[in-house]
Image (tube, one colour):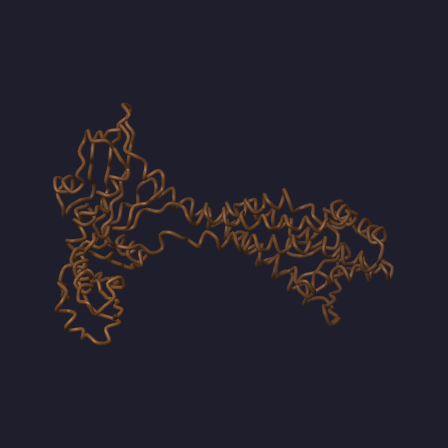
Length: 479
């Protein structure tokens, strides 16, 4: 989110800040906040994974649609927790504590200011003018400002001429009618979440300035004279600014406001600049939501250049396994089919760990024994002589048994007859190989479209039992 905000803020500063299309600038700033909050949440490649091996001519791919967030959470709960006293956990706890305190401080300030404004509106005389409420303050030094539908004036403004007072009210009425307060509340709420990011405060100040430009332009256009309205701005320029939440009639940006009032209108073609926000948003999305993620269990290897590069002369110095209790190191080395001295190839390593066409990879070795929640994380450390040391950390998780086995789309064939055609029974140990065999058998029956035989495993966690359950649903489409 911070990265997206910085990107959009930089584009605004370089291309839009000096344009006189104030409404366009306002919506760009508001949209940049909303988009920055949403883009990182729209992940693309790894929300859903597939457990299937490369299909052979007589075997269709196994379409296993799993909720990997649920599986990862289950695997984490099944893995023995690490000691909470290590340095990393203390560091994270400290950072979270600092972040939480900063967020609470910002939230307290926001709530305090809202409460102060509410009290201010309730404790002073108010007059209903239809589109807004006029609140007459008692403190003489207070400037004119607005919040929501309330416009606040002080005795200081009684000395203004009727024309000047009318212009002042027209200015605040623009804020009311265009609901500028909602924009500020959005920025203030986001600043609670991202209180540490200076970009959010830059965007807030720019948005408040654009609000003032909009109101200034509307009043000057109505008065038909920029100089007369500019005189009023200068007359009230020395008044203090009350709160970051409100729209004060006169602020420290008075020079910039007068400059924008007297700036010639931007050329219509300059609106095309705003189209640059689209590729910028796409780039920000690619940089945040589509970053590499760990390869899901049994998923196909990535096709990125880093993993498809040809084998180099870099050799493997050593292979170390950590966390394996069910399968011996010797058996894991046999499944990995790599040994010290072999050439290091990231693609070959990934295939042997999780996606070997022959089904003899390390992941298959575990999953065929019921360890559905198994995962392996390789670490590659370059040695002084140019070779690499491989460390393969295993999280075995808990074993899983088959629960209920159901079929959908079988309008003609009974579930009993279909169950007889597959090598699966409730209570059996989970096996990916048997699931693939069951899919193949259903495809060969001839009654269903072989390309649309899907398998949906659904885990059912049993914390008080020694194993978890996996309910399996076969989705069929009759010919």
